[in-house]
Image 1 (cartoon, rainbow, N blue to C red):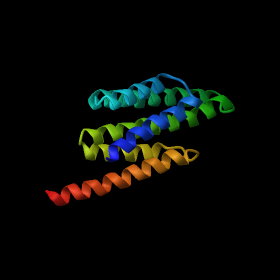
Image 2: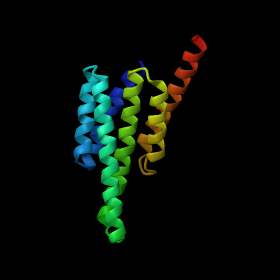
Image 3: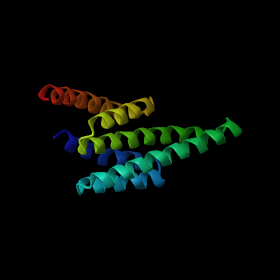
Length: 146
């Protein structure tokens, strides 16, 4: 169903991000994708949460370095990559919540991903918007049947 699409999208998106950056958050997201494929969504969710936490930490360090020397282009580029990775982490987290039928938490994670996504990452932004739209429709259908 919808979540199968998300899993394929997650794996593809993580590969795209991996080409531009390599760190612990990437490792966590790759682990998340594997665990999700194995149906271990609680463990996959933990990996996505760890990736988001790592991204937050990396972004704080990056901002510290930019405050020390605003002209360091390397850190400006890194910030953009980390911002996209943070958005990806929350997107993946949303998918895992959805697998676990925790729809309100899924929607919150997708919304955080949407807020975090870089303006340069239109493909990820489109995926997040699609996930929010599909989940919102499914939540409304679920409420109708209650």
